[in-house]
Image 1 (cartoon, one colour):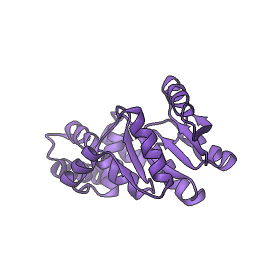
Image 2: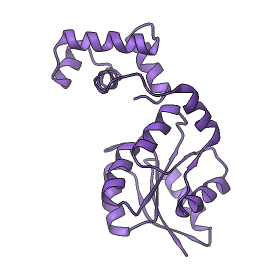
Image 3: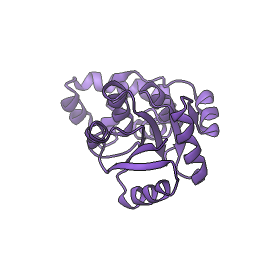
Length: 202
């Protein structure tokens, strides 16, 4: 059986190298390759891959959001997150989005090939070190609104700009920021964003 693969990564050189590497395997065929998250579902519908390898940070739609859409609209396609960002919060969110595998990009090539074959058989495959870190880190303490505020703050937006973008009052934004600082243990808003980002909560 030939396993049909879809690759999604915004770095063209990485995508091409991955495609070349995977096509060397006798039982793999890369049938689609895209550089934007909002191209993933269309490519999956057109090419019907067995497995989609998705990067997390891409323009248009991030890999986690794309995984959730794929799970809903192309359920026969198994999703493996392949990313540089081995953050505990990302793994939890990936599994919640329907991904069945999570492999970091610095893993050996044969580990990726093995992961693909295992998910095709119905197994879940997770980088062991990341699984341990995820259990140790626990769930994100942030509410959905606190997360939205920190994501918007990550762009350098002022309280007034965050309020405008999220249709909230400035006082409400300050309350969310204060709560997020407390929950992350950050010293200030910038530190809270950094900590939440490092843990994959954003």
